[in-house]
Image 1 (cartoon, rainbow over the protein chains, first blue to last red):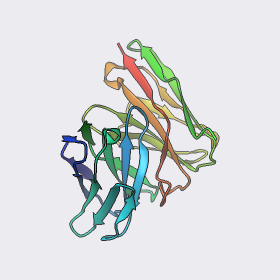
Image 2 (image 1 turned 180 degrees about the horizontal axis):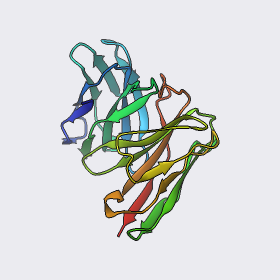
Image 3 (image 1 turned 30 degrees about the vertical axis):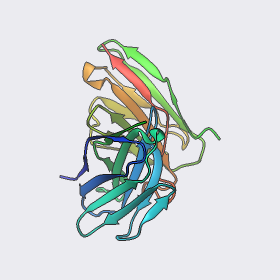
Image 4 (image 1 turned 30 degrees about the horizontal axis):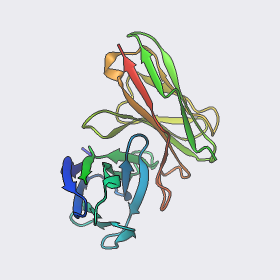
Length: 114
Length: 117
């Protein structure tokens, strides 16, 4: 069964801390892995990863993929209260008709305290 | 540029009622999909479409119908609402029939919060 598992499910840190969020997956014909940030409403796109070992970076956020061990991590350095959100990991795979599908993990709820 | 527009934002239904959740995108995206989000379960794919006239089932299609008569619109129909369909529903689109591409991901609508009593 195809699945995506995120850990931890929730996390509370203080401003300035560094956090690492984990995402492991088991899917057939992996195509890419995506990270989203969800605050009150719609998820917003952070990163797409397709190749192992190549770090994607945007400001204080970075992510890397390990296709051998089937996982990805999302790092946030010097956290701020505005980083409080649910972080979603999703894997894109072709499915039976070679059309893209996204399977999501449960999400990690991050709370950053002042 | 409106992106993906979902209506309504909130809805309360009685068990057995039917309704249609609307989704429209103005980006000429080929791929559109519907997800439901429940606490602790992430987003689950209900139905998706890779172009006008083509739809397919996702993980949790039972109780829902879709159609794609135009590129822009992808409505989700609940035929006979049940309390188990209480959820937040998101519509998403992508420029590729193969799903998200680099630097695009999916564009999500702002969601419809549905309560079935």
